[in-house]
Amino acid sequence: MIEQMDMNYWKYCRKSNIEYINKTRQVNVQTYAELIKQLENEGDHKVLSNLESYMRNLNEKMNLQSITIQEASLQMIEFALHLRKVKEPVVIIGFIPPYYPPVSLNDFCSSDKLLGIIRNKANDFFGLGVREELYFMGISDLSYLSLNSQSKVGETLEPNMPLWNHGYKIPFKAIASLQIPGVNIGPWGKDIHKRTERVYWKDVVEVIPSILKK
Image 1: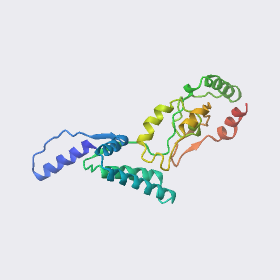
Image 2: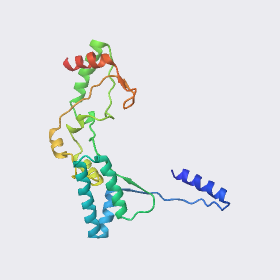
Image 3: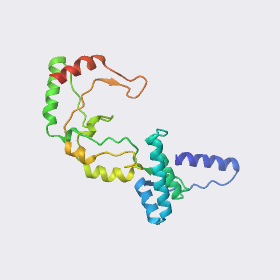
Image 4: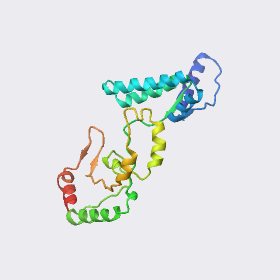
């Protein structure tokens, strides 16, 4: 983006017959938590009150389903920037729901035994190999069955999610208390989230159900 801006400026200078000065630009990158901290440090109670009032207004709109939680989150960030009177370009890093806590096969000592059974059944009955991945890069309900990094996740997520506790919350303590091990077993497929997305039919109706039963 910065390179494109420089190129446009160079073209403008050449057309306008003025000297092109190559300037080094500093990109302002900060987290949403840092942005809110700056507002709090200013100590303007009216500004903080406006922030809370705007958040409640967004929550009411979400309850009426006039906006999505994703739209409300972006509007909350934009309003905070407006209150901070930010005029220069800035990149705000934060989280917008839904959030799926990371779950890895390495989190469970019992996973090796289970994977061994799955691997043997797939090979013995169908002559298939099994590819193992520590993380499933899609979305899965398994993310809400265990949590081995509760404090780290909460400390980072909560202050950087604009509408945390206002229309969205994850019960980290309850999830951590479950600690239910799981393995996501799926069919062979291609083109996830595209119009051409598909899975191998035999895997869905025969292979996967048989492995689960056995």
